[in-house]
Image (cartoon, rainbow, N blue to C red; front, side, top):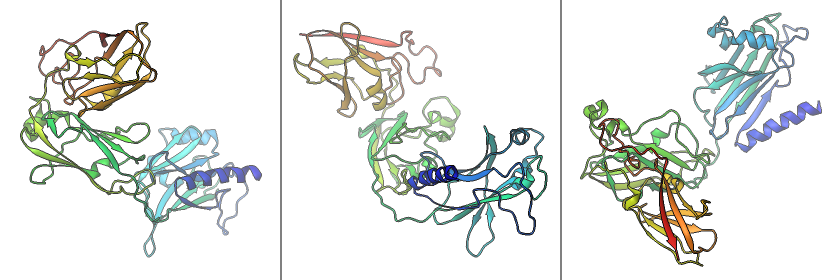
Length: 406
């Protein structure tokens, strides 16, 4: 019994960290009606539980474990009717004064688990009941083989709005008409799901621009959930493609726009943002010229100091890629340890070395997949697949720029 209690304590602890209150009813064995007692069955060792989905606020799975292998195989069989799933494992929303409502979601077998994934996040303040009926499983010895029930109550908690938008890149006030993406940075981890409900692009008349973003089901978050990549629909950028012909460009040269980030967006703890964020900018001509590192200039730092190396990129570059795709190598080809950063609206790249500079030969190595604000790579305009022969594509993965410190 101590092992069971230890397992239960671990699960309750995990849910408490996510801010949930879990009420378990009959989770340690089948719950049988008084009118139909049954002898022990092959399913009496099953467990039913609610399991939080990592990094997704108010998203949980319902899992049944301990089922025999032949039962799991039968459930995975194409001969098992999909209409039978709800009889085996049902999840209901319970509201005072109304009948329980069945939840929408997906049943599936994963490894040794029978799992139900709700289609939508669970709402604070509501009560949810999961019912597993072993008597409805394929191979059950009796229709009354036993039931398990687990109830979950998510409390309504006072919100602590502390998370906010720290920066939106590009940071410039004038952006090209064929701008490809925004990066939205947050002060604390955010939650996944329904991000486009909290993002609007407004024109000069404060009217929403129709369908400006490429709405991806797989949201483009950094691993720490602090940065979201927001892509403008390429169909609204590339010339001679249907979305551009039907809807026109998302951004127009000479116009002003506002990117609005709603305060209703929730962070990883389920709290709304501290405040809304507005990025106002005007639009300049489209940029279809690939970046050329051979035109970049640099300011050499003095030796025996830790002053940064400064590189003029000629035009603003994609902030995330510029910080990741430019490297400093010493004469032996080893990467110099240090920290890159961007200034002057992402037009100046700087490198702060971990140790003092020494006299000698160095190289600035740039990956050719680096992008400017319009998505142009080195030697390859963003529209190269539309206009064949506009520019030659580089074969080498990097461009090497030697320099010397004396």
